[in-house]
Length: 291
Image 1 (cartoon, helix red, strand yellow):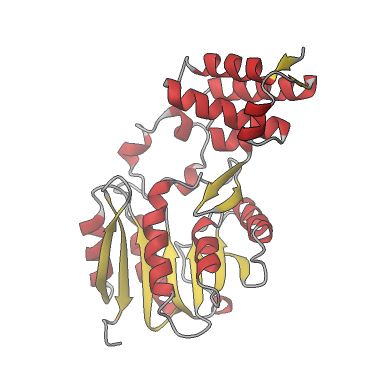
Image 2 (image 1 turned 135 degrees about the horizontal axis):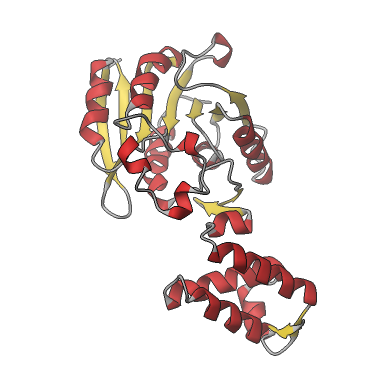
């Protein structure tokens, strides 16, 4: 069945009103149409009285049904934008969120003041969103994307190529819960958005997260702090003298994370908030500011 672009948009928006507010439903409907047709939003509007192909209509309707089951839009589209970078995303990786811009901005600001050709490790990299953002802004940085999941590393490698950063970015398998191998080398800065959801919070996650996003990228142990203890205890060995550790954490975890860092010889340099004014990230230096 063929439909005019305007009709297809209105039908899609109307169906999405079952689960979304009117503004969000409109935005999502436009994104589905653009993805299925290859047209921009401006072209969809200009061509609203023209007919979309039957294939485009079928694709929009198939994606719509996935959305109505609660599947996140990013997985339905297969891509998402983070820090101005287009990224491939699948259920093998977390969907990059605006919250993560806080730790990303901390890492970029510090990266601009590192020595020439700094080495940066994005640990628990998932899609590679943080490390790739650093590489895109710190033009001489050599970035390593590391994750335990081979599937995630495949996505991260594709994203490096998509954003023409493969020349300064490598992908390696590494377990944040174990001591790093000598193969990794030494870094000027390690940045990480590790799993930090507590056992209780895992039972309270919304359907769209609990049933679609990878559990191994979410669950941080009973109190949500297992990875912070492991990273501070194990990966300090992968830092150069006076190196920096930049971490995202969950709501209300800031004091506990900073205490873990200080117990492992770090000096807290900065704690920062996300766009929702929730404390979200910390920058620390091993051995103190004068190291």
